[in-house]
Length: 419
Ligand code: ADP
Image 1: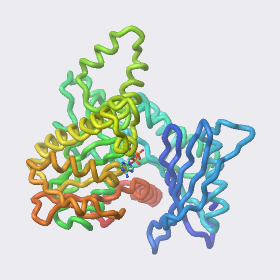
Image 2: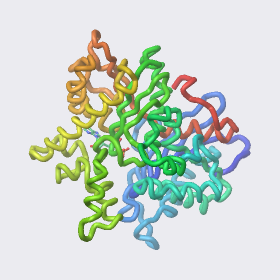
Image 3: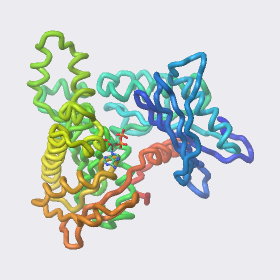
């Protein structure tokens, strides 16, 4: 695969990047007009800044590569060297293709970016301003864009925002009860995980039929976690707010918190704003409450009472906020689980559904436990609320947006089409 726009006889391809603090997830797609977007490979570079490793899987999930990256001149591999390795791998293993563009997940688009945007130096500097609002993600998202720009200055890059999907919410769902000059300055509830919700919204008709246009709550439960209330497959409310710290308890983030706690912490000796930020983003949630781990698999496997309490609190918060979103919708027709925990943890699904019995959610225990990775209905036939597991695909959503921006269709609405 080589960068370019008009290499005759070569297949057009797109690269999708989701860059975090210590890893870069990527996916490469063929983008031919007749066959649509077809994934060629996906993978990750892990251990950036420590012991880097490249892992790649083919379109059928078969492992293609799993090796330590040794870079003698740069033992703590930074993002630029990581991308050099990735382009090198693509050059050797995805031959016969022209790379048209790289599409990126960018967590925060603020009030300015309600659509995916072609990256320019001006756009990058605007996005830099949102770093304090998403310190776990935004700097890494942007450094990936910068690293690729320095390696391949001519390659078009497209930023796709996690905030975008929620721009359809009514004013009351976005407002904070603060003085008006603050909301005028952009201090409002934005919501996140929008690329995941947008993918699920595009997939709902194929799975739920007309019910997908009803009152649906999607639970995106990964390391970060949030709920989104949809009506007509548009966001009407969500649990994350001004930052990705609000709402549900997460792997290492606290979720909703009495702001008085923050004021209290800031008054403690040695607690600078940065120390409080670190505590709330990186030392709280499942990790903080259990004292063991922020990883749900580890907690489910643990016999420690603190692990059980962390799971109790995690489920309690989901059940509470599910009630809140059902109130925003005036009822509930379907509940959809997605992301790492939502797709894989039968225990968490079972416990959330048990707590949601008052909403007439009736889980089919056998379906819930049945192995299988695809989309599936897990409610009993008589359940008034349909319960589904639908695997998310943020990378495909980014590829769709990137292709649309390249073709000048930046405002395309994927909810109108099939998945
Ligand atoms: P990210 O938000 O980083 O993309 P994921 O969506 O991959 O994260 O979700 C990671 C979470 O999913 C971790 O807490 C992990 O333990 C959990 N998870 C993955 N598989 C399982 C499983 N089989 N059972 C329980 N939890 C799981």
